[in-house]
Image (cartoon, one colour):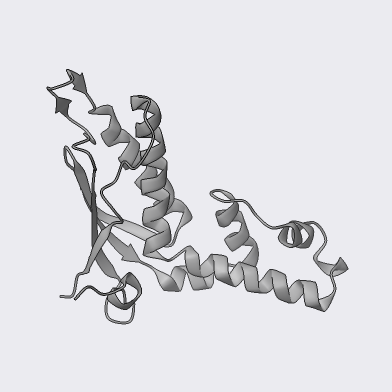
Length: 174
């Protein structure tokens, strides 16, 4: 019986996880597609660049990776303590490198002393939610997969799914 990812990932048990995801419709992630006479080796750099960028923004380190012709593997280390040590301003700065912010957070950044307590409470709750997401494997993998899928679909001038499904993950317990 399958388990939800939430129950599969326990940072208390281990901060190390092996994740992988495959392409759909016999699509090529990289390498030679002899049936179409195309080479997709440049996509390996897409994955490597995206992994490096996201590991800078998130509190998740890349321990190892392998990009194959129709899938990729990555070993991740979640550094929850690093994320918990970030100031609220740093969490917002990191979040805004990837996603849209929130009107109240924008006002807080400009004039934190001018906000009422109820608004401040909402801002602090949002920042804590963003902090949690910045050490969440699901959000990290989403950040890789969604971007690569959009780029590949644009390159191939097609629409629809690029990945076979959501990523698979396995805890690495020594």
